[in-house]
Amino acid sequence: MAKIIYIEHNGTRHEVDVKTGLSVMEGAVKNNIPGIDGDCGGACACATCHVYVQPEWQAKLNPPEDLETSMLEFAENVQANSRLSCQIPVSDALDGLTVHMPESQH
Ligand code: FES
Image 1 (cartoon, rainbow, N blue to C red):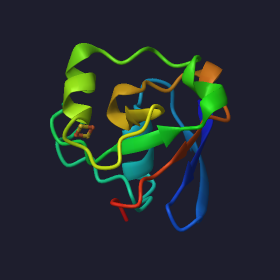
Image 2 (tube, protein in one colour):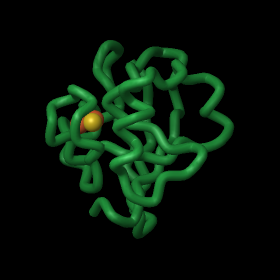
Image 3 (cartoon, rainbow, N blue to C red):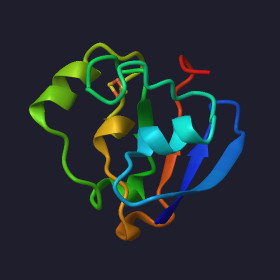
């Protein structure tokens, strides 16, 4: 279980507990957080779960696999700290993880 902080593009902050084993995307969808749709159900095939990871957390995450990197090319406004949140598994170590949603997702 970890507390994940999701911040919408308009600044609205959502702080929710997400069970270990779920992805950061699933944590958002289960809690009806706007800005992360997860249209493909986590198959790394839609990029509607694009988030910006707060810099201090980047190194603590599993690095992106090739499929995630290539799917990110289809996302808008990609930055150095962009990730697909369906590819980030939640664990206790991620307690406090903060992600921001891009302007194109709301
Ligand atoms: Fe579709 Fe993440 S939910 S790529």
